[in-house]
Length: 438
Image (cartoon, rainbow, N blue to C red; front, side, top):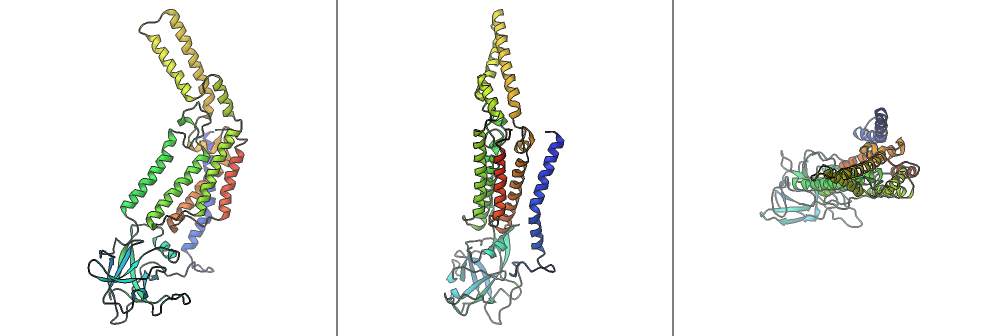
């Protein structure tokens, strides 16, 4: 394919990506402008930015210190999800611990276990809350921790008092914040999102998997079609089906690790993620099955090379070794006889002709580079291949944005989007029947 054709292919792929991402960009703009005229606000939840504390009544309790339970260390930089936050008050609380409600940045953290009033190792008496994530408070944690830009976040702490206990027949009511920090300094600490240690471990694991899957692709047949066994692995063409399968595997694996070290939750793989892996795996398997079933130009070349005694690349290497050996014998010492020299020259010429035939027949089936292998066949640019490539990349970008922003593998991929992915893959497999192999 000439440069102009290659440029048109690239422009077409970029255009499809822009069209795919346009609805997402419109949603993002709408989220940032929720109160434009004629629209309703997207959410009425209080913002998660630290707000000035409400002052308690004169003579009331105040938050004296924020510590880690049970060690009694300062909370800043050490309290994260699944940690125990110890709230030390300026005096003994007048109510049992289970009547106190924890507020972070002005929002009640629902679904927590009842607080207990206990002693820490430092001797401080404190109300202890275990910060867990569950279905009751998941929206709060997603809003607080989503789209992280730093390792720690400032959080303002407040307490509310329930005058009436919760019962199955009487839902818990959200009390007002009645206990805060000092008159001029709010009770605040730096909430720990992630540590360098865990980030390094996760990064190493992702790099290892990427190297295991894609690092071998340059010299091995991990992501390549083995159309001609007479070609070495590094010259086999790249496979679109296998590349798509590896793309979703690495993407979902990296997302799983990212969510685990942030949320300490291993149940983050959504049904849509499984569906995407299933579609890509089925596509790769069906593509291999079609290549095995049909009689392609590659099969004809394979039969012709086998008739010449070249059944695999090992046979090609054997021919090259024989040529080198006979050339060494030809140069001596000892100097061969005239008849032997003529015989060696004929044998060398015969093997060189065999290699020339091998190179001529296999050249059209050698790799032309990753992009051309994935988007072209022997006839040139293939629209069904471009379609699969562009939709895979577009949905992959949307998937990553959703994981980073919402701290969840997108559960909002509609059945229509999944059907689109399936139709693109089905079209690719269907067109492989009349398609000439790369």
